[in-house]
Image (cartoon, rainbow, N blue to C red; front, top):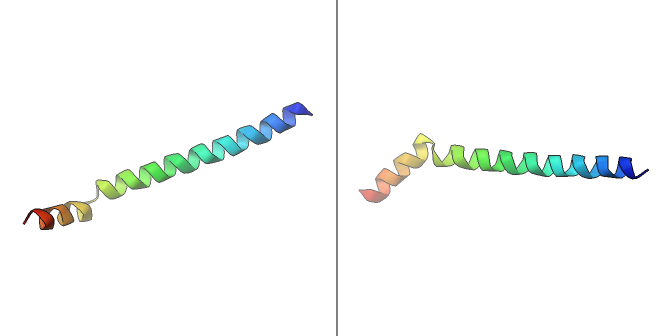
Length: 45
Protein backbone atom coordinates (compact mmCIF):
# COMPACT_ATOMS: atom_id res chain seq x y z
CA UNK A 1 0.00 0.00 0.00
CA UNK A 2 2.44 2.71 -1.13
CA UNK A 3 -0.39 5.21 -1.52
CA UNK A 4 -1.20 5.06 2.18
CA UNK A 5 2.44 5.72 3.08
CA UNK A 6 2.52 8.76 0.82
CA UNK A 7 -0.69 9.99 2.41
CA UNK A 8 0.88 9.70 5.87
CA UNK A 9 4.00 11.55 4.68
CA UNK A 10 1.89 14.29 3.15
CA UNK A 11 -0.03 14.63 6.41
CA UNK A 12 3.21 14.96 8.38
CA UNK A 13 4.61 17.53 5.94
CA UNK A 14 1.39 19.50 6.08
CA UNK A 15 1.47 19.50 9.87
CA UNK A 16 5.10 20.64 9.90
CA UNK A 17 4.36 23.37 7.37
CA UNK A 18 1.36 24.55 9.38
CA UNK A 19 3.49 24.67 12.53
CA UNK A 20 6.16 26.73 10.75
CA UNK A 21 3.57 29.15 9.39
CA UNK A 22 1.99 29.52 12.84
CA UNK A 23 5.41 30.15 14.40
CA UNK A 24 6.29 32.73 11.76
CA UNK A 25 2.91 34.45 12.14
CA UNK A 26 3.20 34.71 15.92
CA UNK A 27 6.78 35.95 15.57
CA UNK A 28 5.66 38.69 13.18
CA UNK A 29 2.79 39.54 15.52
CA UNK A 30 5.23 39.94 18.41
CA UNK A 31 7.54 42.08 16.28
CA UNK A 32 4.74 44.39 15.17
CA UNK A 33 3.02 44.59 18.56
CA UNK A 34 2.76 47.97 20.33
CA UNK A 35 4.56 46.56 23.38
CA UNK A 36 7.63 45.85 21.27
CA UNK A 37 7.47 49.39 19.87
CA UNK A 38 7.38 50.79 23.42
CA UNK A 39 10.49 48.80 24.31
CA UNK A 40 12.22 50.20 21.22
CA UNK A 41 11.32 53.75 22.28
CA UNK A 42 12.67 53.07 25.77
CA UNK A 43 15.93 51.79 24.29
CA UNK A 44 16.35 54.94 22.19
CA UNK A 45 15.60 57.28 25.10
